[in-house]
Image (cartoon, rainbow, N blue to C red):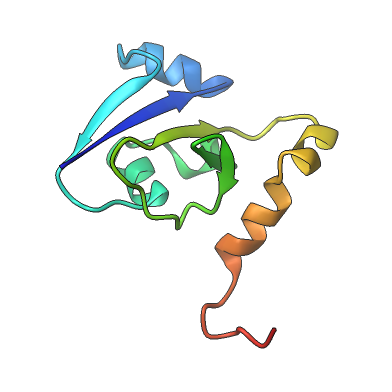
Length: 104
């Protein structure tokens, strides 16, 4: 079993409040999860998550989570300069890469 600390930002704060969740939400996982699988289990709409921070770093949604990880789901709408500086574009590219396409 692993314990995850889940944060919601922007419009996701309203979702957390609507569901009477604390922010951060402590989630007890009884199975291995990726950030995407956690999003699904929490029933957070995919269109409400642009990127995910794991332990303060932008990571692909396909990243496997470990006990004690701090996960922050970030919705669309972060201003453009911050998107670049925070690594949004790099994380999105990693999520869409074909694992069999590793020529470099």
